[in-house]
Image (cartoon, rainbow, N blue to C red):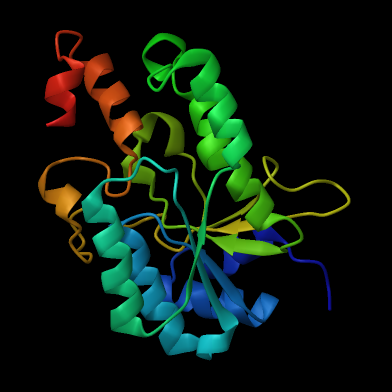
Length: 219
């Protein structure tokens, strides 16, 4: 089998539907590993299960320890509806305890969210992706025009892959818009990130509205 080429994949499938992009990815890699973190990802789960055998569709989610109750209910709703196993990943307990012990529960107010997210999200994600050749996300260009305007349907993942162990990221919803229609998560109706953790939500609210108190953010 020849090495996977994101450039060639884009040339052949950039104008294809998300379902056909997933089909091409399955043909190239023989399995589909999906990151489930919000409403868009339900579309991908639904499509993937129509393309590949259930045992070849791997779904995982990150539990930061600070998710809202609606998010846990949403995960269970999807698990039960599709009768699938969802690999829920947790942060390292000792690392979380050390951070809280040293800086308290809300250090992201002072330091930004990089350190907290690094422990609660990035490290568990890196562990889950280790050894994989490819993973699938629900990222779209219109989610964050400032940082994702150049998003492609296939990319070399330099953040989690390496020269010796290349990792590719497939983004079937790259060209979708937020109003194209997805499974509605309760947080979408509240104009919040679908599966954002409570801490990150509060940090965003305080960044956008400095007068917004922690108490009101938790309401």
